[in-house]
Image 1 (cartoon, rainbow, N blue to C red):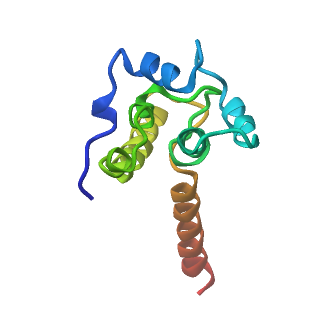
Image 2 (image 1 turned 90 degrees about the vertical axis):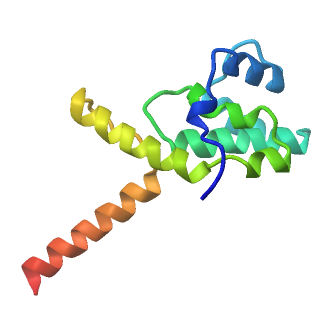
Length: 136
């Protein structure tokens, strides 16, 4: 898939620009973004921003922090259709999971980040393979 590399778009000003877009002075907890999604008063841009923060933080690019990572906030500043479609979201998820696995191995972490769906599918196929070797 073509598109701009999200991790390369990160700069020192990314976090402050994102905070300005969501009208906050500091980065809220992931839980706060989920709670804001339940309100009926959000504009479409904010619904998309908050949904993506929750989806990225909890599922696609998960880690053990209660705050969203600033590394994927750049595409959530300008959420016009043209800009959103111009980012390489699949590369972000791919890079994130392999970076998480590398950090887990190198730094002997007790938790592993990355796409929960990908990890679940891999575990399923590993279990199915082991079952087929042992039981067949």
